[in-house]
Length: 343
Image 1 (cartoon, rainbow, N blue to C red):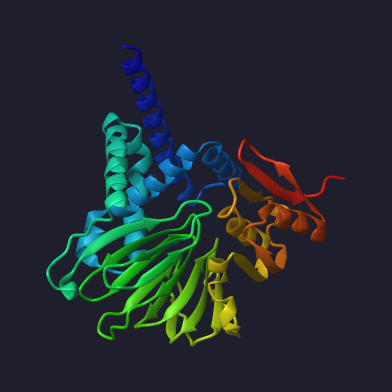
Image 2: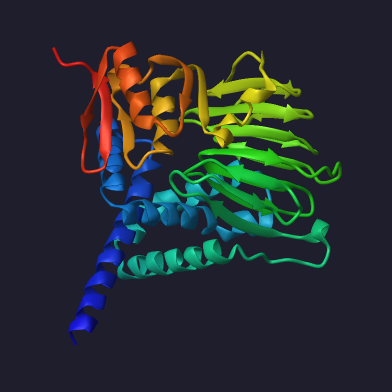
């Protein structure tokens, strides 16, 4: 009897965490979300590892739940996401509070867990007629290499998530969060498209690195050529080997020539920043730390340049505080915040 009660309590607690994760997903994806709510969300997220796990499953669930968008349209991942958001976020807050909503949210998370564990595919005999969706993720401080069923190799930086959408027309990948290095198998009749925020990168066969940041993405090409487009304004750019571009709030930056050694250098334990905002730097560093690194509004746009080891995050934080005259303070159980020094 005692063991049964313990299992019941644990199940009820997990159900509550799952429900809270879905509620946070709706709030964070609402255009009316405030900075205070974003901060509260980060605190909740980093209070316990189970919170991060539950939120990741909730995020994936709601990206999959609009099956009509995925199974019938086969548009870009961004268009799928926008279609799903229009239909589901409007009704979400009412739905999640109902008994059925609570039950289904738990069931959906279980289904997503099964999908993630098995990375199963719905396949036809010919890969060109293949339609499937699969999800791959990496843990904090883990670099994970996977091979997609077309032979494309993907290296995921820590705490990163991708979702694949393969049809007979295109191979589509949505970089849900984080950073990925792609070595794409050449097939001129089967384009490979990676989406991050409203940035789409189209290739036939090449190797490139893409990082999703807070308001856009950074793309670096190691081999071949990629075409980059911004969905919100139809702007495009063509990148060749050893070139990099950053897209911020729909604005294309200048194409920069870079050393081949810089591309995907995180795979070797280093991070290189070139005039990157402190907010984006903190997001990168957080993937290699057991603590979430937050940034106060008054210093989030400070520009950072430098090369830092992923094995020495604490030392990197000390360097940042000294160079920019800021301080780090404890913020919740598993978070710190970079902010302006107190007088």
